[in-house]
Image (cartoon, rainbow, N blue to C red):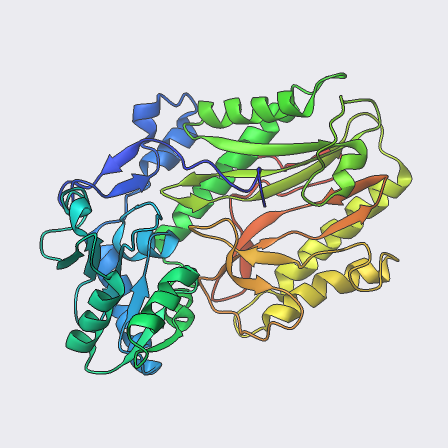
Length: 422
């Protein structure tokens, strides 16, 4: 989602000195931020940065998946998957930079020679870095490295890899077999560890607290930007940089907001969607309320969506299909008269969430992936009446051995009570 879902990378950059001077970890140490709320401060202080032991566990799982899918290795360029496997945050440019993960071997990096010194600030000294000069081909270097370390011509390509890299590899070495690397990257990232879940728990909790604080300052005539500013300020008081994109009145019928702006008036629906990050892990929360008295139709729609959200929560359990969870929510919406299909509930039920606000896997019709413990999703049924208003309730959830639970608590109670008591 442009704007509100392009969450600000949060907080101070904590360096893991024992691991690498340059591993920028996106997160907050509460004591450094002078967080006044004692409970929030304790939550933030309990968060531990990800380090060598975490990456080693992730490599071990990736090794198994690489072998299971008969790949020679996995090629990864800058982005969330690089951060996931190594902690390194690097920018994407026209100069190819990345690493290849081979079973049983630490990442082997490919880097422009003139960037080597800077890269070495981030890459541990026990990991190999291979360089190419400005007049040389990084694709030939990648091909040579794959042949040396994999013993075969197959390489998995991380799914967000840019086309010019794929075409460059094909052009320079037509015998190299480029295969889909998503079974490895998504197979690892789709199942969250307890440490990752804790980050998601805290991020979602803080966003809900920030919303609640901002909603207490609503006043007639305020702008959407003013409410968004209050949400950012509240996040900051809890020690994080966060966002919340409000839509007022008819603009709320656009699931991701409208460019048209208006000041708040009595009877307006207020829909807010946003979040923050803890150690890079995202929250994603939507709440809808009415400024003033809600109509009977608005109350009916909100209550329908809450039933739909709870039906999805019950359906989300190990072994269930992703599409079955979407169907559980959609059935409630349709039976309430807001169907068929995508007529009013116009989007999938939910998306995976982690280092990206939207990531694999997705709760959507046609997705027959079986749900596993440790998967995390948004659960966000919505009903949108074009030109009138839209209502959506969104909480993130984590799949447990027994079922699923909401991350961050503070579930919605009613259209007048967007958050339960602590």
